[in-house]
Amino acid sequence: MDYNQGKNETAASIEPSQQPGKSKKPILISLAVIVLLGISTTVYAMFFNLSPKETYFLAEKNTMEQTQESFNKTFAVNEDVNEKMMEEPSKSTLTLGLKSIDGLQAIDPNMAMFASMLNDVKLSMSAQLNPEKNEGIAELNAGMGGTEFIKAEAYQSEDLTGLNVPLLYNNYLYLNNDQFGEVMKKFDPAYEGPEEIDNVVKMQLEAMKNQEKYEEHAEEYGKFLLEKIKDENVTEKSGVEFEGNKYKQLTLELSEKETKDILKALIDKVREDEELLDLLIEANGNTAFTAPGMETADMKETIQTELKKASDNIDQVKIPEGFKSVVLIDKNEVIVKRDIDFKIGNESELVVIDYSSHALRSDDLITDGKWEINVFPENGEKQDYGKMLVEIKGKKGEGDAATRDITGTFAFAEAGKVTGANLSAKITGTPEDMKADFEAAIKDPSNAGIPPLKGHFTRKVTDDLDNRTYASNGEFGLEVDAGLGAPIHVTFDYDSKTEFTKNLKFPNVAEDGENVAEMSPEEMERIMTEIQTRIQGMMMNGPQMFN
Image (tube, helix red, strand yellow):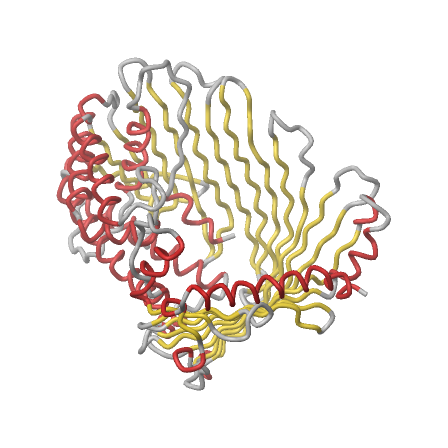
C-alpha cells in the first residue's frame, strides 16, 4: 500500500525502564527523534555538479516528492479540491448509514429486533463555505426508516455565531463573536476564559493555506542542515549490489560532537522561529509541554522554555558512536534502501536505535517493501524494547489495477511484558475503485481476551472537478468473533460529495434569531423552561419512535 512509502522516512522510539531520580530521558528520546526527522528534512534546491552531500539531500527531496505523488495516484487524491475550497464557495455532504448488523442475537435473542431497527439508521452531515466572507454553516441530520428525528444547524460569520436545534427550540440562538465573554460571565461571574469566539471558517481556511508555509519552512530547515553538514561528512561509493541490481551508495557520518552541535543549532533555531511555533500550536493545540486551556502566548513560552532546557542540557547527552545513515539511490536519485543506527542516552544507560528499510518499485507500485525499526536499551534488549515492522508485496494488474499484500507487527515490551498488534491486509483494484480486506490481532498482557478483528473497506471515486464536483462512496465492515456462538458483523455505507457552486443558502440569523447576550434573566429562564419541557416530552414519547 503506497501510503506507507513515507514510513521509511520516519522513526519511533520507546523509553526503557529507568532508575528513579533521572528526568532527562524524555529530552534524550526527543533528541533521537529530532535527529532522524531533521536529517530527513527536504531540501528544495537545484544542484549542478553535485557533491556527495548535495546528492544525499537531493535524494531525500526526490524520495519525499515521489512518495506524495504515489500516494495521490494510489488513492485518487486530487489536491486541487482543497485549493479550490480556499478560493471558491463550496458545499460538501457526507451520508453515513448502518447497512447491516448481524449476530447480536448471540449476545441476547431479544436484540435481533433491535438490530433490524438499527439497519434503517441514517446520519447525514453537510457544510457550506464561503471563503470570501469567512461565512459557513454546518448541518447534522439523523433519521431512521425515512423519518428525521434530529436536526441541528450551526452558523458562523465574521460577526456572529448561532445554533439551531428545532426539536428543542424553534429559533436560532446566537451571540456576536465579541460577546462570548460577556455571556459566559452571566452564567459564571468568575469566568476568565476567551472574550471572543474564533471564526472557525477562517481558521479552517487558514489551516489549508498553512501547508504552503510548512513547505517554506521545510526548504529553510533543509538548507540550514545542508550548511551545517560538511562535505566530508558524506561519502560516495558506486556499484553497490542489492537484490540483483547495482546502486550508488551514500554514507552520512557524524561524530558525537558534530551530531550534538547540529542538534543544538537545530533546537535553537526552532526555539527562535516564532512563525513555525505559531503554526505548530495552531495546528496541534495542546502539546506534551502545555496544559489544556492555555493561551497561545503561554503555550509558546512554555515550549520555548522546554526547548531552551533541551539545548542547555545537550552536553549531558551521550551519542558515543555518533550518527550514521547509509542510503542506496537509483538512477533517478530516489532512495531505494536506508539503514540508520546510533546510540543515545546518558552516563547510566544508552538506547540503541536501529532502522532499516527498502522499497523496490515498478513505476509507482512498490513490489517489495520493508520498513523496520528496533529500539532497546543497550543492556536490556529482551526485557524492554520497541519494534515496528511493515512489509509490502505489490503486483501490477491490468491498466491501473494492482494488488498489495501488507503485513505489520508492532510491539512494545516493558519488564518483559509485551503489548503489541499484528496486522495483515490485501488491497485490490484501481485508484478509483478499490477494496481492502484486513485482519488485526492485539496482544495485551493485562487483557488476553481481546478477540481478533476482521474487516473490509471499499471506495469508489468520481473525480469530475472539471465540472466542479468530486465524490466518493463505499462501505466499511467489521467482524468480531468473541466466542459467543456466532460472529458479530457490522457494515456501514457512506457517500460523500463536494461541489463548487455560488448557490449557497445561509440563514438570516441576525434578523430571525434571538441574541442570547441581550436577553434578560426572565427571557433566558423562559427559553430554558421550554427546552426542558421538550426534552421531557421526548423522553416520555421516545419509545413510540420504535413502534
